[in-house]
Image (cartoon, rainbow, N blue to C red):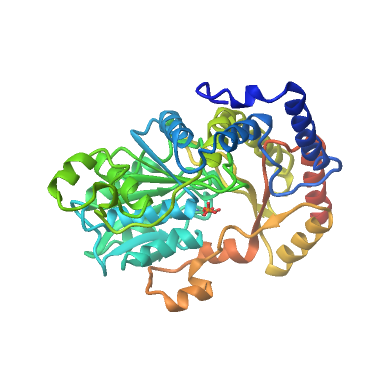
Length: 424
Ligand SMILES: Cc1ncc(COP(=O)(O)O)c(C=O)c1O
């Protein structure tokens, strides 16, 4: 609970104890047998009580708790600014509208190109189209499953203005090389870190290497605000645009609101719309969750890394049958999930997935697979650069299982045993 409020303290102690007992029972009921769901709830009494505190105070929409979470999240990453929104997709939307904004000093204009890995997520690609730019889909590296740097370089043309990189399943991209390519060609670098909370490259957190970083706090992610997202940047100009466009395009949350208002004395400064905008605001409940989840992030990351190391060790004898995702040199992988690419036919992958699901191990495709194969792309302008062999392979032969802080040793063994039996 925040120090400012003592509303919860006013409740009778027994009431709180009762509430916590109910919550703990709900959490326990999800852990009764050996199974590997995509995620188990990562919140507990702290998040629930902090949310109740907001409800009781009647202050529910974006306020103090969101501000506190933004400031602590920025501090955790080493970023100058963090602007919370209602989802990771909204964070990507905002990132694109920042670099495409008429007010940005050097905007990405309609018809310009933005390079993005084909093996990515729908809402990593769609916001590029939303600003009138053209997504250029490139292939990924077959070992790290991240944007292939040679493919990236050969996709750059006179029209290229930005790179939308993505740390796939938490594996950090080679960020020094990406930054160098971006700088050499005068491109914006956006990092989609929606699956990479706490990941590092050369000891520095992902999200602060690019001009803008984006995060998702959806329920299945490393930390969760139920739904939620964050835009981070070191640019004061971009942060101002984010604050403006997050809430209707009005100036209320901007640092320079006073000086803008002075330029338009005939308009009510409370309803002065300075840029195009949306309503992507988070609630105080989301801020309340974020404050407490962030304290747990490092321990969640360690648990995920330990699970992944265990599976890589146990499953090493299957190296001929399975391709694992390689941790990038100098990178700290945070294993959003544990991906497997089957070295065989698509049928083998499908049979394995069916077998695992039967054994109560939840599986998911590797994001959207190859975005070029998704039917939505029929209606969206885009360009494919080179071949997309790895993206196709990830789609046809790959999948991932959930990897999270609450997996037990028995459950880790269960997955390893299922795989070994299948390939035997
Ligand atoms: C890489 C990536 N980008 C963006 C998103 C969108 O985040 P959200 O679900 O919070 O909108 C996701 C969602 O899982 C994702 O994995």
